[in-house]
Image: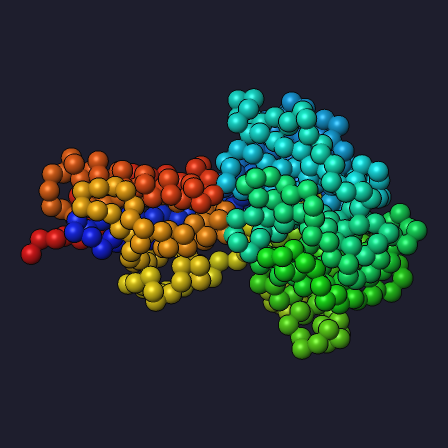
Length: 495
């Protein structure tokens, strides 16, 4: 458990203990022909309840503990009991679209989710979204019957999501067909903004080939780059992405020989390396994004996986364990890249890693908000004052204790004073930036005064901090609190 102690510099010294627990919200995957993998034990194992029969795109929603909420192929939506949701049929995505769907929680909500879909091969249904309400149907969820809201058509089969720089909102990005336009739609607590940020850059997608809509679009975990594959055109591109404005720029284009058909795309967790799968020749290539020039990056191409018999390799997807997984078409297992931050064969590829039992992999793996795979950075800093290091620059690890000041209340009161807001605003920023974190607020007092009154006071002060964080968009489901009074004093005022 991770703890942060906030001390208030007031007459009656008061401390709040925050326990921050990082949890995977990508703990269960379903894909392919009734294939599934459960990561929650720390080791991926097959699971068999899934209802999918999807050659390509799928999307999963899980809670902060990694437990399944619902999943979709872009057309049907199944709940955690693997039954179709109410109104969960005839959505206008397509299971043969490369990235048929992506699911984005509504910022600030604990129970509303946006399910975005794209049609196959530049089809007329285009890019749409529906709202899923997990508070309905005994908390198993219902698709809003008024949804399937149209946003844009025609578009390619590329769809990704990445967190806004403010740590709260989310960009959902698609690409137009028969043009060179990216469309970045912002998701905020108020909903999905109808007008996208349009960026004209890079290669025109389409050029008369239906297959030229295929291939993945991914953001790197920190949301500063995009990469995509164009299968029929035998090329891939890497871009800069401004996650504050939604603008895409500075394309770098790489080409493969005829017959390679680049398809899957993934960044290493630290963003230093790019991986591209080429189903036509059964290979995965690695590119070093830290080279000094675009040409040096392209020249760094290294074959790290080559499958006997040119077995098709489809999607590449970061897992909650920091490894990159890939399917071998129509086979009962997944391959893996164990150390994706390492260059060359030091990345430790393995083509037969997870047995899927009776399930069969196809080309697709789930599409996620890539920001959830941002790696944690260990720190051993011991802080005595908030002024030493900004909270947003700190990543937390298990059993680390950080002491932070400047949470203020009047004597024997539980209304937050104005000087507390700056510190709590920064905490809210971190929590909104890291939705995988859950927190526990533990109120403590010194060991002076009436014990019962101290417990009540500490409880109300902890609740006041929770309410402030709720106002800043942190979901209530992520915050618990308890008042300990002087039962577990952080310090004593005794002299």
